[in-house]
Amino acid sequence: MARSIVAGIAALVLTACGGGGGIDNPLTNPEDGPPAGNPAGHCDVPAEAGLADVSAPRTVVGDGTAASCTSAAVIAAVAAGGVITFDCGPDPVTITLDRPAKIFNDTGPDIVIDGGGKVTLSGGGRTRIFYMNTCDQAQHWTTDHCNNQDTPRLTVQNITFVDGNSKNETEYDGGGAIWSRGGQLKLVNTRFFGNVCADTGPDVGGAGVRAFDQFEGRPIYVVNSTFGGAEGFGNTCSNGGGISSIGVSWSIYNSLFSHNHAIGNGGNPADPNTPGGGSGGAIYNDGNEMTLSLCGVAINDNDVVQHGSAIFFVSNNHTGDIRIDQSVITRNLGGSWYTQYPMISAHDDTMITVTNSTIE
Image 1 (cartoon, rainbow, N blue to C red):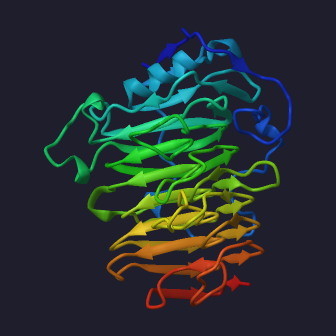
Image 2: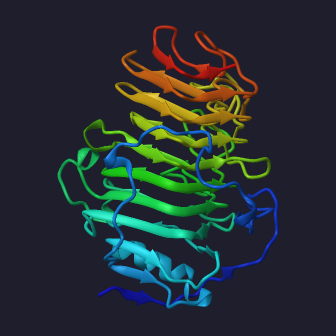
């Protein structure tokens, strides 16, 4: 039987106020934001990339009232693992966390966090929202090969992340809303608005999501999700306004990246006398054997200072590739080093396969 977590100490934000996000202007009404996903995306989604079953939750956050859905309740539920759902009443709610909710590696093997389409988790412009790291001893080591283990398998679905802020993180930087290393990660029907990470740095990024070390090099699935999506709702970091990773493959379906910003300067590695960064308005990928696969994806109106106004993709050993199908990449601004396609920065020998798509 599911147990209901009702204790808590942080405020539940239910005010309606549009705006930009970040610590000085928190975005407190995600209901004004665009829906999850690209409405023009109609690609078939593999079965393994679909919604996880939440019919038998380990924990239900809340007792049917908005007041029962608190920061402490969310943090405790995530720490307990398993399948997590919410019962916060009939109306949409925003739960503002006072510290990151941390996944423990021995509470799976499957961890599912499902907001039911009505829950927003906010960092309040002060804290990261989710943290998972199979190589962090504090989160309990479960194997002797923490950088390549199959669990936890984390699915985050039907939920919105706003105002995550990892600028105060030093050891595990980037990942304004979600920082993930190891196991497997999947995002379905998610939205990311107004999240931020470090303003500068040559290899820090992912205002929405920062990822490392997926099991056996399997891709992170992103399905029917929105990063930004409208003016005033974008995410901002030195690199990778939407997502950022090192050595990770991504399979992204029917999703929207727009109005995100890579605001560092000096590139990667940093030019002399610069702090570095400014690449990957929507997507920043670095590493070796990796594939970025987009199907039914729209990437538009993102901007950068240095490279890759839409996509920055560097395979250090020149083995990675990009696959773009039934997608539209347009109106992304700034940057340079466009060797094959506009708005995509990659080595000139990187294999980029484009079918039934518009890049202009």
